[in-house]
Length: 264
Image (cartoon, rainbow, N blue to C red; front, top):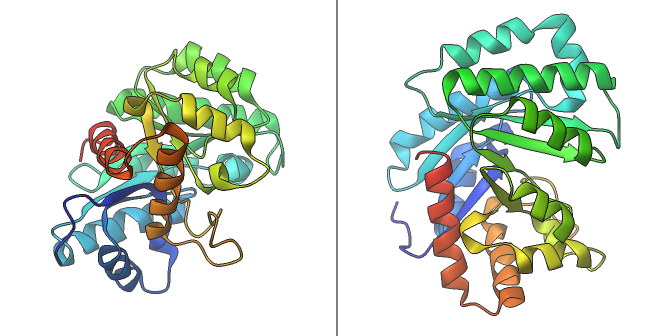
C-alpha cells in the first residue's frame, strides 16, 4: 500500500494485541501513517510484538515497522519469580528480527502493582541487557522521577526514549541532560495538562517523538473512543500549534527522530 511522503510516525503502540493487526495497520496506512513501533510489556507481549512486526513487514513494504521487548514495572515481581530468564533468552536470540529497543521498562510508584525492590531490580537488569546489545531503552516512569534519573545516571549507556512523558519543563530539562528523546502522547492535548503542554512547547524538535500508546490515552477530540495509531496526527498537530509551526515540520522531524533512534 502506498504511504504519504509527509506521513506521521507513531513511536509507541500496541496493535500486536489487536484481534486483526493487519486490518489495523491497513487503516493506519489509509490515514497517512508511515511507521509504527510495537511495544512489548511482558514476555508474552514482547514475543507477540516481534512476531507481528516481522509478519506485517511483508504485506506493508512501504511502512517502517519495529518492535521492542520489555517488562513493564507493573509486571516486575511476577517476571522475577517466573520468567525473567525466558525474557532474556527471547531478547538475546532475536537478532535479525524487528527488535529495535528494550522496554518499556522503568518504575511506577503511582500504582505500585509490583513491589519497589522488584521494580528496581527488573529495571536495572533491562538496562544492562540494553547495554549488552547496544539497544536504546524505552522508559516508563510515574511518580518516580528522582529514582529513575539516579538509576539511569548510574547504569544507562545507550540512548533513552522517555515514553508517554507526563512531566513539565523541569523534568524535561533533566531528561535532556541524557542522550535521550522525549515522547509526547495524547495527554498533551488534555485540558488539565497545561504543564505537559508547556514542556512540549519547550522541547527541542530534534529531541521529540510523538506516540498514541494505542489503545490507551486517546487524544482530544476523540476522548471516549478506542485510541488508534493514526490519531497520532492529532497529537502532532496540537504540538505544532503550541510551537507555531507547520504540522508538516513536526511530522517530518518526529518521523526522522523515530527512524534514527530506533535504527529503522
